[in-house]
Length: 299
Image 1: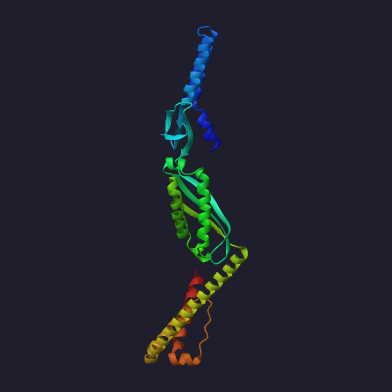
Image 2: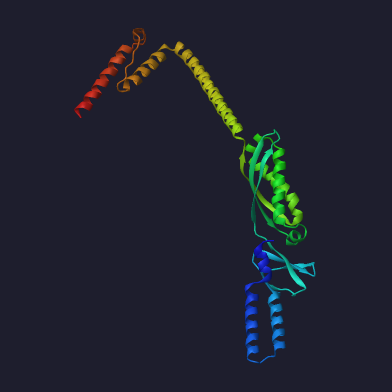
């Protein structure tokens, strides 16, 4: 139980106000001789008991009331009264969602790789009575059971599975935590794996392996593309073999496209010029290029 809870058990704004007002009035009446000292002492004791009976629980918490050491009930949120001396507040249970960080260091995976895993769990108390009566220091209990569950999960999975299936690992860990914490009146709403740290040497080896795999895939893709291109060329050659005119038109188109680029120089064998009648086409293309240059210079 933290220090703030202990302070709340003893004092609160309402009880302090009552104590100051009544004891002040008691002192004034006694100093004026209106009341006897016995009455003043009795008044003071009654004032202390009344102030002690007034307690306050915040909006997000419940107060566990024990009467003569036995569970009496829950109070709050807001102000409430207890019977002084007989009743006492066992604890204030916070029902907000809490965040607990936990980790597993140098834990061996199924394939004997030491890893450091950092995780976080979001949990809340849904049954205050169980949390107060079934487990002592339930906050520490959640932390310890989370660490134990994380180590168990790591030991049942290989490293590759941990790295690739974080969400599934977190979900399995959440179910494992719920099985242990539900009898305590606590539910784990979500578990997240923040980081998985592997040895530096192993990280370098895995990086090189991944790079080699990417290069292999790139070569496979390039080889597949070359195969498809060669098949297309084979199909085209059959078409040109049966249709010489189409071959000439293709050659003329390739030559024309090349001559359109500024500063380009294309060397064509004389046999190709004669067979495809490309000489005339080349002259027309050159004449067109000279004409375009003349227009640009005149501008």
